[in-house]
Structure formats: C-alpha cells, structure tokens
Amino acid sequence: MNAPWKVDVALMLSSYRRLLGRGLVDESLALAEAARWLYEEAPYCLLAHDTQASPCFIYANMSAQRCFGYAWGEFVGMPSRLSAEAPDRAERDVLLAAVARDGFATGYRGLRIAKDGRRFWIEDVTVWNLVDEAGRVHGQAATYLRTRPA
Image (cartoon, rainbow, N blue to C red; front, top):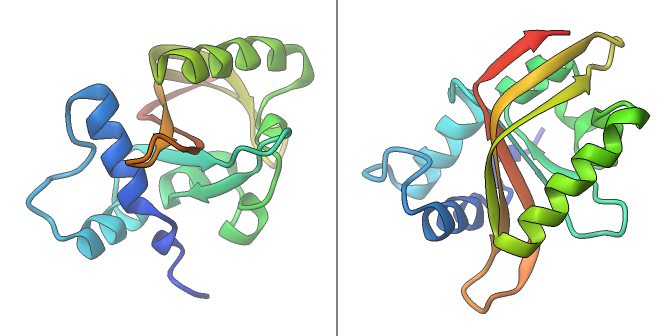
C-alpha cells in the first residue's frame, strides 16, 4: 500500500494553525515526519472528507481506523455521513454547516457507529475547514481524543 499519509497533510496542518491559532503537531517536525507521526502514532483520531455533495472520507489515521474498525481502503472513499446513524445525521449536518460558516467548531459531541455496528460517542471534537492559501475549501477535517461507549 502507498503511504496513505501522503494525503495533503500540509493543508490539514496549515488550515488548523490558521483557523485555530495553534499547531496540531510538534512544529519542529519536518512535514514528512509530521505526516508519518499523524498517521501512525498520533494518540488522537484524525479524519478528513472532501467537498462532494455527499462528502467522502479522504483521510483516516490509524487511531481513527481502530476506533471505527475500518481499514484504510474501506474508510477512504466511504461517504462520511455513514459514520453516524440516520437519526444523528441531522445534528452532524448542523455541525458541518457551522464549520462551513465559521471555519471551525470545537467541543462537539456526537454518536457514531463502527463497522461492526458498535455505537460510541466521540467527545470534545474539533472540526475545521481545509482551506488553501487562496481561500479555496477542499473539505473538512476533524480530530478527537475521547470516545465513550454508547
């Protein structure tokens, strides 16, 4: 498998810094090392999806893959709405609309569903727009450290 962390990690990192005013990783790391660390070692989940009408995941680090029970090839390309149950999708849509409007949101809590059907809460979630230097939005990313069984 190609190194999945070669997804535009620079865009995730620069957008996070620009919108939240702090770094997502140790900023002394070179980009390649930061990308590897985010994918393989980060203690928090990191996910990103694109800008399609029904956004699809374009990135999921190993922590997120373990959390949801999907391998990289199953996760990437899957519509992100499928990570939440149908009744909880309206709340998720409100969150994503707020991020589209404000650039980011923090403190979100939402119910999610893993590949095996297990339900769990993601807590203290930060979601931000993936915005390049020209202001073009390429998608949204989310990170969270805490989960709790539902």
